[in-house]
Length: 434
Ligand SMILES: Cc1cc2nc3c(=O)[nH]c(=O)nc-3n(C[C@H](O)[C@H](O)[C@H](O)COP(=O)(O)OP(=O)(O)OC[C@H]3O[C@@H](n4cnc5c(N)ncnc54)[C@H](O)[C@@H]3O)c2cc1C
Image 1 (tube, rainbow, N blue to C red):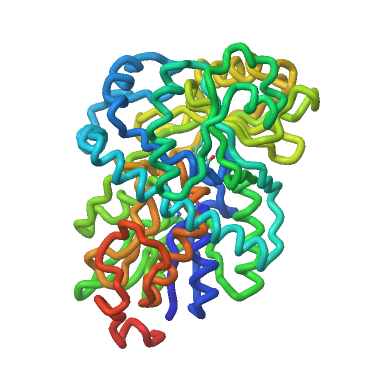
Image 2: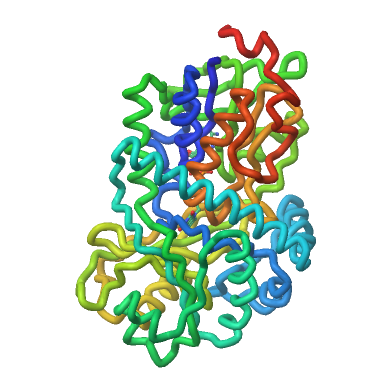
């Protein structure tokens, strides 16, 4: 089949790779000049199955209320006259019950475990190098209440097969000696030895090289303006290239992987996707003092920041602001991150050379991504990965490639639509090359 992948972020690139592996003729379209140039550009770098507790959980409504209007809050709703934001907020509240939280953790852990194993297999098969580290992820807590609150979700994750172990402050310092400076402030920690980290942008660029070598076509600097439906299925994509030339691009099947822009493209087709942009920040610092710098990937739960070591750079990322598609850098937020880094690891990074970045996470109210079928038989979804798009990229890419091919996915997950192989075989018209 000819498959058109819409978007060349982490989810589009991994979809393209696995579709090509299954023998399809794949074309990827993206508005940027290079792949992974938007939300997949400078994320926190964590492959964190253990980061499975969704934003929507029983303690979230009170916290979100307390954080309203606080410029440096970890999760900030900037209330706007935006119906999509309000609807998203209501759906978010619905996901905060204990039962929904348990269900969502289950989905996130299952997909995460499968995805991490798929990434490891890909690395073995291809030898891809992207500053990866397989040293686990350590969540540390400088607040006793936050630590106590983390014990139950950690237990649930262990029951689901994610080995997130509760450890003492001393054990945490043994695993990551750079934490010694704040030893007295540590209430406790958890450690997941199987988790990993790596440069997601470099990974995507390396994977694109493999795809191109295999014959996948990338139409970069092409802005998609519409998906056109004829006779109950997608007939073509409309796009303009960087010289303003209008194009119609046809395929047999289409995979929507346009991150936080995804809902805007399919709304005219009557497909409502509960995705809203959640702006996050990252700071990248060159290592200044190796003896103070962290090696292991870390999560600071109180400040909702993640720390990864990418070669000789420190990447710190986090915070979320629901404020439409605005990507402006807010000085207060940038400085709050640098202050926290300096408090934890004084002198480790060179703050004078800090590179600040913002990206829009394609967030669903449940933190569970949208992967699978739509009401149109040749339009598929691989989007809405929110906080965990890097962690979930390989598993989602491989799953959507199997679903498009009429094969059963290899993981038990709440996919969209009926994805049983016998439930909706592709029609002969769709399987024949047009
Ligand atoms: C601060 C921050 C830290 C994060 N840390 C982590 C982490 O540690 N671990 C983790 O697992 N995840 C993390 N994430 C989440 C992860 O980065 C995202 O979930 C992931 O990058 C989303 O990828 P995507 O392919 O869906 O979207 P994108 O990367 O945004 O890709 C969508 C693509 O669609 C293209 N596009 C959009 N509109 C159009 C159009 N009209 N025409 C053509 N092309 C178009 C864009 O150019 C873009 O390339 C973090 C995110 C942020 C913001």
